[in-house]
View 1 (tube, rainbow, N blue to C red):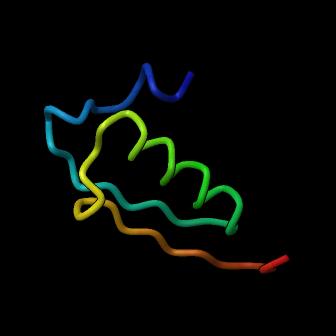
View 2: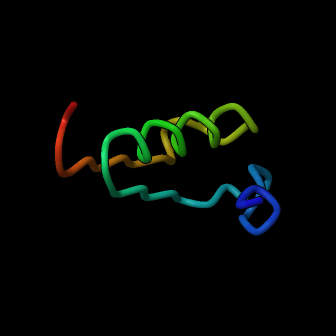
View 3: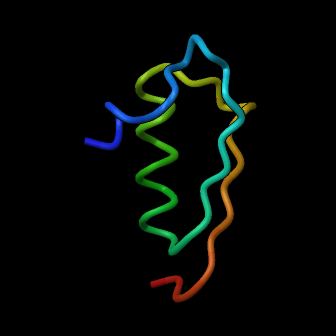
Length: 50
């Protein structure tokens, strides 16, 4: 569902994802899988690491 409400890769949005490690990794991976450029994605993890 979130994919339907975000800017697509063609818009070249800068993306910042911040949250628990599992959330950040999942969302970052999904963005890359649908075609977003890795260089436009910033990830920040916080909280427990396991």
